[in-house]
Amino acid sequence: MDEQVNNQLNKEAAAVQPVAIAGSRPALIAMFIAITLASLAIDLGLKYYAFHFVADTPVVLDHEDPPWFGVPHHEPTVIVPGILNLQLTANEGAIFGIGKGSRWVFVVVSVLAVGFVLRVFWKSDARMRMFQIALALILAGALGNLYDRIIYALVRDMLHLFPNTDLPWGLTWPGGARGLYPWVFNPADVSLLAGVLTVVWVTWRYTPHVKEANTTQ
Image (cartoon, rainbow, N blue to C red):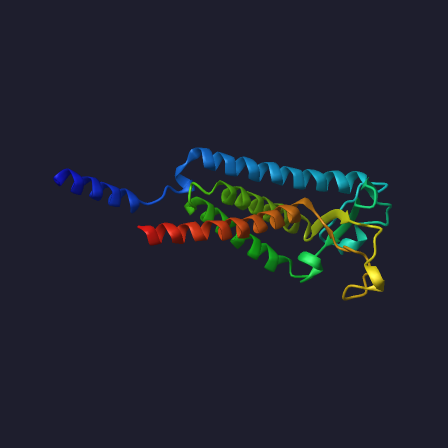
């Protein structure tokens, strides 16, 4: 009888033991750093290549001058015909050009976001591998655009989707743009979007399991 009681107590104690956090696992920390650095290298590498080789001459962006003086008219480089071009632009704002001229606001927000992501990773459930990969992508995207804002006072963009395709039925976006996707972006934006969508998906999948585990204890 005493043995059964002890076994039950041991099971209950194991059930309430705290879950290991990612910050306690060197392998997860190494994975997080590796993905962040690889994604950041892709972003900064493509930015360097595009702004040195897409236009007829290397584009030098001087943060003391308005950015549109630094990006001359040039023919885009076709990567996938009808789907993806390299087209240089300098964006002083955030996504879709929102918030132009708010450089230091974006810098402060980005720094806070970096600290928040690091904290969330460190305290996250060590079993949530996809969640940690997503956080690494978010961190890389934030660092890539933060670097641009500090060094150039803007963000270097070069990826243009569906460059020769207009919206159907004569439709236009607010502002008059007719392109199917008129905005130009960069790899950091891709990392941010992929990371955020993955975090939403993982959270949606993980939360029901946590609730079920809690109700069965």
